[in-house]
Length: 140
Image 1 (cartoon, helix red, strand yellow):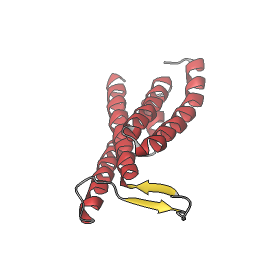
Image 2: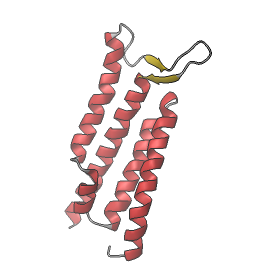
Image 3: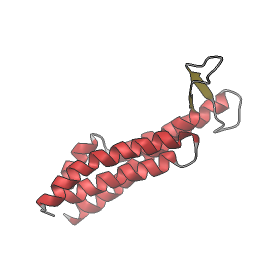
């Protein structure tokens, strides 16, 4: 597509969509679905950008091979489960660290569910981006 309006709007919209996807990733880290839905929103941003520009420019925006991003995501998600197993708990059990904890406050809770969601996020972004780029490049 050679639409100036679509290209201009896509460049603005991609940043907003990526920020929103990171919000979804963070907000959902104590609830199911944060990594998956955040990854879908980020992948949708790359789809919009690919349709507005070209697969070559979309690859440049991603800065990495999308297949590699998906594999790294799967490795991170698996590692989060292995951390629990190494700690003597069941695979994928949550391990938590409380930063800034005091007697009156729990502090900021960070745990293996956030690591798992980050892995899912990267796997979804990489997988969808790889599929979309492959389809767009096969059309060219």
